[in-house]
Amino acid sequence: MTTPTPTLELILRHYKNFNARATRDATLAYWRHVEGGGRMFWAVAGAMSSAQLGISLAPAIRAGLIHGLSVTGANLEESLFRLVAHHGYEDFPDYRYFRKEDDQKILDARMRRVTDTSIPEDEAFRAVEKFIVPMWKRAAKEGQRRFWHEYFYELIQAVGPELHEGKPEECWLLAAAKAKLPIVVPGHEDSTFGNIFASHVKHGDVPAGIVKSGIEYMADFYDRYQELSTGKGVGFFQIGGGIAGDFPICVVPSIKYDLEEPVKPWAYFCQISDSTTSYGSYSGATPNEKITWDKLTPETPMYVVESDATIVVPLMLSALLEAKEHPSEANALIQKHA
Figure (tube, rainbow, N blue to C red):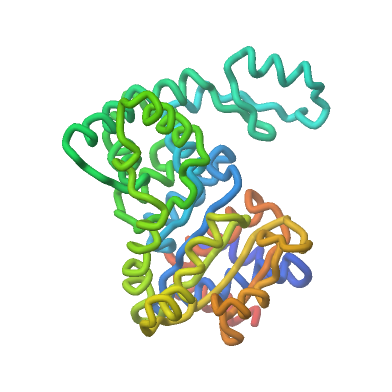
């Protein structure tokens, strides 16, 4: 008989030790948390949108497995690029053997390589530019100030189906916009459209103030965190490191020490990263280090999977989606393998 939870069964049966065990334990703790009414906040670094992680993220958002996001400006815009310019992407599976001259040819073809794939400049950057620059100019004319993601939330929903090259059901940005997920985009200036926006500010086309600052993101996130952490609390699921992870996780100690207000600690922590622990590295820092910053507590369930998120996350989310759709079967299977 075909099982309704094949990925979950694979994880429970085969993932016994090392990174496999960490993956299994993190998946089961994630399920227990959301099944019990808890929420989960994701921090997404790296080039996950270019790697098409939206195939996994979008259905997880729709299923109520992801309740908030912190993403780099690159991941935000590249989810949109994949929707409108998917056919223009080109893959380079032999990129490890490229010479400098090979990459120069990619540049000459107006492509921008991201490891083994590439973003087409004209179909992505320039096509989106035609939509978003008028939005900035309209905001300037009307005296509006908005968060960076709010422009993209409006844009992704305004792009008509006739412009879709990728599958809309695999676009995490579209799923997040429709769900009105709380989102922060720390360091959004460090992205292609952050640079494009800066050029329009330099030319005097728009004032920089039409985009709310990172400080305003944090000030707003105080309230968003308190909302998310009601009830069973909110967990923290981190892909990679850097500002996408460090910015939102700091909200707990900042509320506690800077606002001097009561705050619940993060209820779960999992990081998927292939970064090694080194001197001063945030990406490779162990969760215990975060205890010293009061970001996590000794009681926080903590998991680290030292692997490639493009391999691990689809497995975890596939198992979680199965459990969400078939909770009785999933729980019986978990009990069987306990």
